[in-house]
Structure formats: C-alpha cells, structure tokens
Length: 305
Image (cartoon, rainbow, N blue to C red; front, side):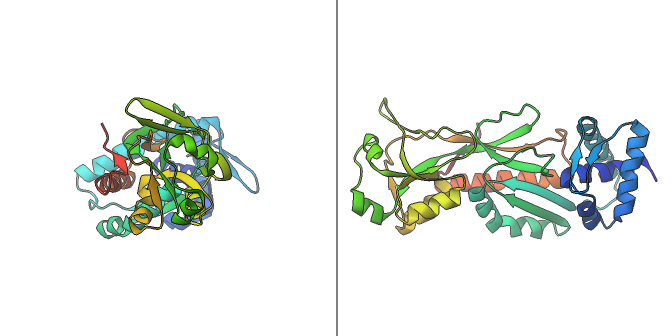
C-alpha cells in the first residue's frame, strides 16, 4: 500500500465526508479506504478525521494536510498528462454547490458539459446558503456577495443584477407605484440570502432611495420568493436572470426599470490549491461559460472587470 494511493483516498474522503461514498465513487472497497487513512495517520503520527458512529469530521491536522495532498496529486496528474502516460480525458466526480436560481440555469446546460466529457460526473447541491466547503464535501461552490472567509480561493464570475417585480394581479389590487418611496405601503416578499441587508436600494439621477420593505413573506429560497410573487402576495426583489422569462411572458411586471439597483458580486470558490485537478478546472471553466451566456442574454450579469 503506497502513500500516493492513500493521499488520493484522503482527498476524496475530505471532499465527500464518507468512506462509503468514496468506495462507490472509485470502486475501491471501504476497508481498503479505511486502511489508506490509517496508513497516513500512522505515517504523520496524527489523527486526520474524528470518527463517530454517525459522522466523520476533519481534524485541524487534516485541514493542514489537505492543500498539500491536493498539490502533490495535481503535480503527478500534470506530469502524467505531459508525458502521455494516460489519455487526456477529464474523469471523476466533482461536487458543486450552487444557489437555487443559478443551479436551475446551470442544470439546463449540464448536458453540454457531460457530452464533451463522458467520463466526468457532476453532483450538484442546490441551496441558497452554504457553510464550510470541506465539511460539506464540495469541490466548488458558487457564492453571491462578498467573500468573508479568507481561506477560500475565489474567481469572480460577474455581478448579479436584481429586478423589482410584481404580478399583474398584485398591481391591480394595489395600483402601480410611481416612486420607490411608495413601496413602504406595499406588501413585500423578501429574499433573505446569507447576511445581506434586507433594505432595497434605488438610485436615479443622483437621487437615492433606501426602502425597508413591509415584509409579509420572507424566505431564504429565491424559488419560494418567486412563487410567492407570481401568486400575487406582494412585490419582490430577485436576480434578473431568474425572473427575465416571467417578465417577458407577462407573468410578472418589472417595476422601476429606469432606477439603478445595486448588484451583488458573483464568485466560484474552492478551498484547494490554486492549481485545481483537471476535472475541477473543467467544471470551473463551464461555470464561466454559463455565466457569460447569462450576461449576453438580457444583461442579468455584468461582465468581469
């Protein structure tokens, strides 16, 4: 049993959080993977994972080893590719965490990526908030808003713009507001993403209007907020790429299109070394491609500077 095989098992256990998941992914038996981890722990004289009957948590020493393990494996993968010792194909599993709205757009395009790389597998985890990437077993994640964690390596994909929208039925009941100040009298449907402020900001010709919406419904899911807005519950502020089709079809009406609403930076992040494994780099490049297409299709994203 060699250290390189053990390092490979280590990084996959770190990514998935499970011996059994790595066994299913690689076809290596679970006892062998356990022996790999035990070999590393004996070699380095430390515990890499804290084990209970129900969970597996990486220790501080495990976190310290992880970037170095990635780097060693990446160097070997690059060398093998250069020397032609394996076919230059993208293979393996990438676990990707995405926000719900972007994840649905991405899923519609995922067939393109998998057609290009038949040996690649992608597992998408969709929700609008994420914790620690290592503990959640994610190779990559999409984040909206500024990145607070100094340990994350981020690649900016663009800026997400937001539109204020309401259903025709809602506007019929409450009339169409003529100024953002009037929104304080309207029922608000509020998207509570991360630690973002709940105020709505509008600017036009040097005039700034900051509104605290009268929230009658709040949700940490952009899909739930969109359904609530379409149901006529109130007005909502949502990512432009998510509501663009509904506005075009008349299901929703865009309000204050002549007012500027601040956007949020949009990143792909990871915890590993800057030189990612080939499979992860391939998915990262696809995220850039999809983001650029969303930008061209109606201005939902601003280009990366």
